Image (cartoon, rainbow, N blue to C red; front, side, top):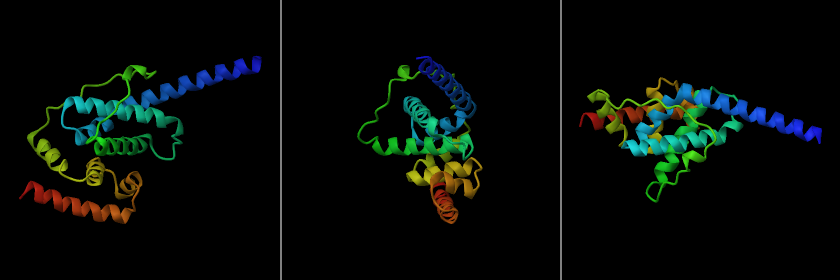
Length: 177
């Protein structure tokens, strides 16, 4: 009886530590999620819905995060995979979970939508790319090296370089017809 009670108390402490660590890391790196949302959505409501869904997926996956890579790299991967999956399903319908049912609360910074005109033009051009091209250019613009890009996307480093060169050419044609 005492052993079970001790295990329950330890389990509760582990859950609180896990929750605290997750919220701390998410708050520190939440701009990654905002940037992914910006690329894959076209209005504030979609942005908020995608941010919420990515946060939920990150929380669900967090207990399996082993720390083999940086938290931010893992976060990119989960965020991009979630965004791509929902983007592809959006032609049917996007189902989200009730945010109130989530145990933890996250303080959110307002995302500044007042960007320079050139940035708006670049985002408009990026939206014309395929899902994988968007993910690649996003990571490239985040100053990730080809090794990190390849690891995050799940392709070879050589393939990442080849695809990136093609994307650059494609963007030049979109921006300068």
